[in-house]
Length: 238
Ligand SMILES: O=P(O)(O)O[C@H]1O[C@H](CO)[C@@H](O)[C@H]1O
Ligand SMILES: O=c1cc[nH]c(=O)[nH]1
Image 1 (cartoon, helix red, strand yellow):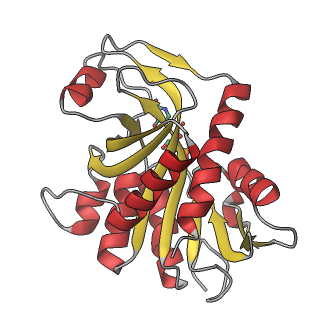
Image 2 (image 1 turned 180 degrees about the horizontal axis):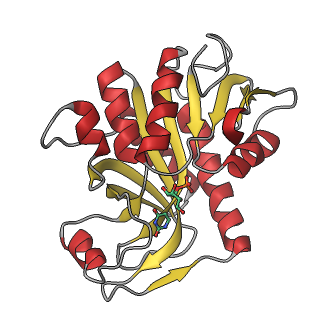
Protein backbone atom coordinates (compact mmCIF):
# COMPACT_ATOMS: atom_id res chain seq x y z
CA UNK A 1 0.00 0.00 0.00
CA UNK A 2 1.51 3.41 -0.98
CA UNK A 3 2.14 6.07 1.68
CA UNK A 4 -0.34 8.75 0.57
CA UNK A 5 -3.00 6.79 -1.32
CA UNK A 6 -4.11 4.20 1.25
CA UNK A 7 -5.44 1.78 -1.34
CA UNK A 8 -4.61 -1.62 -2.76
CA UNK A 9 -3.98 -2.67 -6.34
CA UNK A 10 -7.42 -3.01 -7.96
CA UNK A 11 -9.06 -0.27 -5.88
CA UNK A 12 -8.64 2.18 -8.79
CA UNK A 13 -10.03 1.68 -12.28
CA UNK A 14 -7.41 1.76 -15.10
CA UNK A 15 -8.71 5.22 -16.14
CA UNK A 16 -8.55 7.98 -13.52
CA UNK A 17 -9.83 11.56 -13.56
CA UNK A 18 -7.43 13.85 -11.69
CA UNK A 19 -8.68 17.17 -10.28
CA UNK A 20 -6.58 19.29 -7.94
CA UNK A 21 -9.50 20.02 -5.63
CA UNK A 22 -10.95 17.33 -3.29
CA UNK A 23 -14.41 18.92 -3.36
CA UNK A 24 -14.39 18.68 -7.16
CA UNK A 25 -13.47 14.99 -6.86
CA UNK A 26 -16.51 14.39 -4.64
CA UNK A 27 -18.73 16.47 -6.97
CA UNK A 28 -17.55 14.47 -10.01
CA UNK A 29 -18.32 11.13 -8.34
CA UNK A 30 -21.75 12.33 -7.10
CA UNK A 31 -22.74 13.98 -10.38
CA UNK A 32 -21.19 11.95 -13.19
CA UNK A 33 -20.57 8.43 -11.85
CA UNK A 34 -23.33 5.81 -11.89
CA UNK A 35 -24.90 5.08 -8.46
CA UNK A 36 -22.85 2.70 -6.30
CA UNK A 37 -19.38 4.32 -6.43
CA UNK A 38 -17.15 3.97 -3.35
CA UNK A 39 -14.45 6.02 -1.62
CA UNK A 40 -10.96 4.52 -2.11
CA UNK A 41 -8.83 7.19 -0.44
CA UNK A 42 -9.27 9.92 2.16
CA UNK A 43 -5.69 10.11 3.46
CA UNK A 44 -4.69 13.80 3.89
CA UNK A 45 -8.12 14.79 2.57
CA UNK A 46 -6.99 13.74 -0.93
CA UNK A 47 -10.34 12.17 -1.77
CA UNK A 48 -10.51 9.34 -4.30
CA UNK A 49 -13.55 7.41 -5.57
CA UNK A 50 -14.07 4.42 -7.87
CA UNK A 51 -17.23 3.54 -9.77
CA UNK A 52 -18.53 3.45 -13.31
CA UNK A 53 -19.46 6.04 -15.96
CA UNK A 54 -22.24 4.78 -18.26
CA UNK A 55 -21.17 1.27 -17.19
CA UNK A 56 -17.43 1.72 -17.83
CA UNK A 57 -15.02 1.49 -14.85
CA UNK A 58 -13.61 4.88 -13.82
CA UNK A 59 -11.98 6.54 -10.80
CA UNK A 60 -11.41 10.11 -9.67
CA UNK A 61 -8.45 11.06 -7.48
CA UNK A 62 -7.53 14.46 -6.01
CA UNK A 63 -3.95 15.53 -6.79
CA UNK A 64 -3.64 18.66 -4.65
CA UNK A 65 -2.04 21.80 -6.10
CA UNK A 66 1.34 21.99 -7.83
CA UNK A 67 3.94 19.57 -9.16
CA UNK A 68 5.26 18.24 -5.81
CA UNK A 69 1.84 17.23 -4.46
CA UNK A 70 0.48 15.95 -7.77
CA UNK A 71 3.74 14.12 -8.54
CA UNK A 72 3.32 11.99 -5.42
CA UNK A 73 -0.26 11.17 -6.40
CA UNK A 74 0.56 10.36 -10.05
CA UNK A 75 3.46 8.09 -8.96
CA UNK A 76 1.29 6.25 -6.44
CA UNK A 77 -1.55 5.83 -8.95
CA UNK A 78 1.03 4.27 -11.30
CA UNK A 79 2.18 1.94 -8.49
CA UNK A 80 -1.46 0.91 -8.04
CA UNK A 81 -1.76 -0.14 -11.70
CA UNK A 82 -3.52 2.87 -13.22
CA UNK A 83 -3.05 3.15 -17.00
CA UNK A 84 -4.54 6.54 -17.96
CA UNK A 85 -4.63 9.94 -16.24
CA UNK A 86 -7.10 12.59 -17.38
CA UNK A 87 -6.50 15.82 -15.50
CA UNK A 88 -9.74 17.76 -14.96
CA UNK A 89 -8.59 21.11 -13.64
CA UNK A 90 -8.96 24.86 -13.87
CA UNK A 91 -6.57 27.21 -15.66
CA UNK A 92 -5.88 30.83 -16.41
CA UNK A 93 -6.80 31.69 -20.02
CA UNK A 94 -4.17 33.45 -22.15
CA UNK A 95 -5.63 33.24 -25.67
CA UNK A 96 -7.45 36.22 -27.22
CA UNK A 97 -11.21 35.71 -27.32
CA UNK A 98 -11.32 33.05 -24.60
CA UNK A 99 -14.34 33.22 -22.30
CA UNK A 100 -14.72 32.19 -18.68
CA UNK A 101 -15.85 28.56 -18.49
CA UNK A 102 -14.40 27.56 -21.89
CA UNK A 103 -12.61 24.20 -22.04
CA UNK A 104 -8.86 23.94 -22.72
CA UNK A 105 -7.06 20.79 -23.88
CA UNK A 106 -3.36 21.13 -23.07
CA UNK A 107 -1.53 19.01 -25.66
CA UNK A 108 1.79 19.99 -24.15
CA UNK A 109 2.79 21.61 -20.86
CA UNK A 110 5.87 23.82 -20.54
CA UNK A 111 7.57 23.01 -17.22
CA UNK A 112 8.11 26.51 -15.92
CA UNK A 113 8.07 24.84 -12.50
CA UNK A 114 11.17 22.69 -12.99
CA UNK A 115 10.10 19.82 -10.70
CA UNK A 116 9.08 17.68 -13.73
CA UNK A 117 12.54 18.24 -15.31
CA UNK A 118 14.18 17.13 -12.05
CA UNK A 119 12.07 13.97 -12.08
CA UNK A 120 12.86 13.30 -15.74
CA UNK A 121 16.58 14.01 -15.11
CA UNK A 122 16.56 16.21 -18.21
CA UNK A 123 17.78 19.82 -18.54
CA UNK A 124 15.10 20.48 -21.13
CA UNK A 125 12.32 18.32 -22.46
CA UNK A 126 8.71 18.76 -23.78
CA UNK A 127 6.06 17.14 -21.52
CA UNK A 128 3.35 16.10 -23.99
CA UNK A 129 -0.09 14.48 -23.79
CA UNK A 130 -1.21 11.30 -25.53
CA UNK A 131 -2.16 12.12 -29.13
CA UNK A 132 -5.03 9.61 -29.37
CA UNK A 133 -6.68 11.09 -26.26
CA UNK A 134 -6.26 14.64 -27.63
CA UNK A 135 -7.71 13.49 -30.95
CA UNK A 136 -10.71 11.91 -29.17
CA UNK A 137 -11.24 15.07 -27.10
CA UNK A 138 -11.16 17.29 -30.21
CA UNK A 139 -13.59 15.01 -32.09
CA UNK A 140 -16.06 14.78 -29.19
CA UNK A 141 -15.89 18.56 -28.69
CA UNK A 142 -16.62 19.17 -32.39
CA UNK A 143 -19.56 16.75 -32.32
CA UNK A 144 -21.05 18.37 -29.20
CA UNK A 145 -20.55 21.95 -30.40
CA UNK A 146 -18.69 22.83 -27.16
CA UNK A 147 -16.11 25.64 -27.16
CA UNK A 148 -12.77 23.86 -26.75
CA UNK A 149 -9.31 25.39 -27.26
CA UNK A 150 -6.46 22.96 -27.99
CA UNK A 151 -2.82 23.99 -27.54
CA UNK A 152 0.19 24.35 -25.29
CA UNK A 153 -0.21 25.32 -21.64
CA UNK A 154 2.30 26.42 -19.02
CA UNK A 155 2.72 24.50 -15.75
CA UNK A 156 3.76 27.13 -13.22
CA UNK A 157 4.81 26.79 -9.59
CA UNK A 158 3.65 30.33 -8.81
CA UNK A 159 -0.02 31.32 -8.61
CA UNK A 160 0.50 34.88 -7.30
CA UNK A 161 3.23 36.10 -9.66
CA UNK A 162 4.89 39.40 -8.67
CA UNK A 163 6.17 39.88 -12.27
CA UNK A 164 3.55 41.71 -14.39
CA UNK A 165 5.34 40.77 -17.66
CA UNK A 166 4.95 36.99 -17.23
CA UNK A 167 1.56 36.58 -18.99
CA UNK A 168 2.82 38.52 -22.04
CA UNK A 169 5.86 36.22 -22.32
CA UNK A 170 3.75 33.07 -22.10
CA UNK A 171 1.32 34.45 -24.67
CA UNK A 172 4.08 35.52 -27.08
CA UNK A 173 5.32 31.91 -27.14
CA UNK A 174 1.87 30.58 -28.05
CA UNK A 175 0.63 29.26 -24.72
CA UNK A 176 -3.16 29.30 -24.36
CA UNK A 177 -3.42 28.66 -20.60
CA UNK A 178 -1.57 28.29 -17.32
CA UNK A 179 -2.11 25.77 -14.57
CA UNK A 180 0.06 23.90 -12.05
CA UNK A 181 0.08 20.09 -12.60
CA UNK A 182 -0.04 19.02 -16.27
CA UNK A 183 3.74 18.91 -16.89
CA UNK A 184 4.16 16.66 -13.86
CA UNK A 185 1.36 14.36 -15.01
CA UNK A 186 2.86 14.11 -18.52
CA UNK A 187 6.30 13.40 -17.09
CA UNK A 188 5.16 10.62 -14.74
CA UNK A 189 3.07 9.18 -17.61
CA UNK A 190 6.07 9.23 -19.97
CA UNK A 191 8.42 7.64 -17.43
CA UNK A 192 5.88 4.92 -16.52
CA UNK A 193 4.61 4.26 -20.07
CA UNK A 194 1.06 5.49 -19.36
CA UNK A 195 -1.48 7.66 -21.21
CA UNK A 196 -2.40 11.17 -20.10
CA UNK A 197 -4.34 14.25 -21.16
CA UNK A 198 -4.92 17.56 -19.38
CA UNK A 199 -8.37 19.15 -19.77
CA UNK A 200 -9.15 22.39 -17.96
CA UNK A 201 -11.93 24.93 -17.44
CA UNK A 202 -10.91 28.60 -17.85
CA UNK A 203 -11.37 30.09 -14.36
CA UNK A 204 -9.36 33.30 -14.80
CA UNK A 205 -8.66 35.59 -17.75
CA UNK A 206 -5.06 36.82 -17.80
CA UNK A 207 -4.22 40.02 -19.67
CA UNK A 208 -0.88 40.93 -21.24
CA UNK A 209 -0.76 43.88 -18.83
CA UNK A 210 -0.70 41.43 -15.91
CA UNK A 211 -4.33 42.18 -14.95
CA UNK A 212 -6.55 39.23 -14.04
CA UNK A 213 -10.28 38.57 -13.63
CA UNK A 214 -11.86 35.62 -11.82
CA UNK A 215 -14.86 33.47 -12.73
CA UNK A 216 -18.05 33.50 -10.59
CA UNK A 217 -18.96 30.33 -8.66
CA UNK A 218 -22.01 29.73 -10.92
CA UNK A 219 -19.99 30.15 -14.14
CA UNK A 220 -17.33 27.82 -12.74
CA UNK A 221 -19.91 25.12 -12.01
CA UNK A 222 -21.28 25.40 -15.58
CA UNK A 223 -17.75 25.30 -17.03
CA UNK A 224 -16.74 22.27 -14.96
CA UNK A 225 -19.95 20.47 -15.98
CA UNK A 226 -19.18 21.11 -19.67
CA UNK A 227 -15.58 19.92 -19.21
CA UNK A 228 -16.70 16.81 -17.34
CA UNK A 229 -19.17 15.76 -20.06
CA UNK A 230 -16.14 15.66 -22.38
CA UNK A 231 -13.57 14.32 -19.88
CA UNK A 232 -15.60 11.28 -18.73
CA UNK A 233 -15.95 10.19 -22.37
CA UNK A 234 -12.27 10.77 -23.11
CA UNK A 235 -11.25 8.89 -19.96
CA UNK A 236 -13.36 5.83 -20.83
CA UNK A 237 -12.66 5.87 -24.59
CA UNK A 238 -11.11 2.79 -26.27
O1 LIG B 1 -8.46 23.44 -10.29
P1 LIG B 1 -7.19 22.64 -10.12
O2 LIG B 1 -7.27 21.28 -10.68
O3 LIG B 1 -6.70 22.64 -8.68
O4 LIG B 1 -6.07 23.41 -10.99
C1 LIG B 1 -5.65 24.75 -10.85
O5 LIG B 1 -6.15 25.40 -9.70
C2 LIG B 1 -5.15 25.50 -8.68
C3 LIG B 1 -4.84 26.96 -8.42
O6 LIG B 1 -5.99 27.66 -8.09
C4 LIG B 1 -3.93 24.75 -9.23
O7 LIG B 1 -3.97 23.42 -8.78
C5 LIG B 1 -4.16 24.86 -10.72
O8 LIG B 1 -3.49 23.93 -11.51
O1 LIG C 1 -2.86 27.89 -12.08
C1 LIG C 1 -3.86 28.56 -12.32
C2 LIG C 1 -5.16 28.02 -12.23
C3 LIG C 1 -6.23 28.82 -12.49
N1 LIG C 1 -6.02 30.10 -12.82
C4 LIG C 1 -4.79 30.63 -12.90
O2 LIG C 1 -4.65 31.81 -13.20
N2 LIG C 1 -3.73 29.84 -12.66
